[in-house]
Length: 171
Image 1: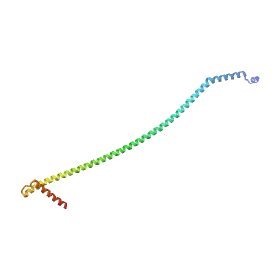
Image 2: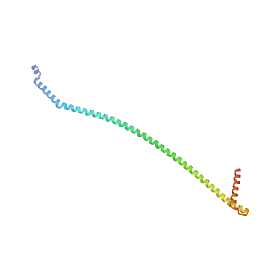
Image 3: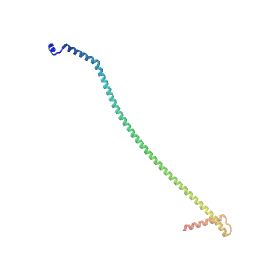
Image 4: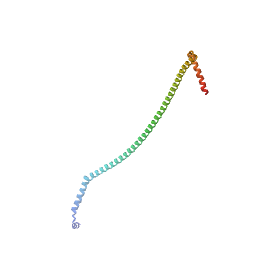
């Protein structure tokens, strides 16, 4: 067999030495490079997995935060609409109160004016009666050529007014 290998150009002791050298190199590389490289790859794989998990949890937290923010925005919109509705109700109530106060003031002023007019009318009638009494006294004095005292004069005026009221009511 040695001759068959020699005829083929194969040197058996050299092949065995190369196989042993390869096996020793393989064992040395396994302990010096292969295990540390596998450890680095495992650590890197673990960091990548942790990063993906962290990204997934950050994505979930972001979606939860987005949902929370949207909920808060909806609540804020609803509260602003309620505040606006309350403000409109208050404005309406204030306008109604102002209108009713204005109506009360107008009615009070109208009553006051009516009372003042009635007082002025009564005062004017009173003055007219006084003037009428003076004219009547003067006329009576001229007619009867004597002075009429104040009590007689007032009695005559009252009788005259009573007669004129009866005639006016009869009309």
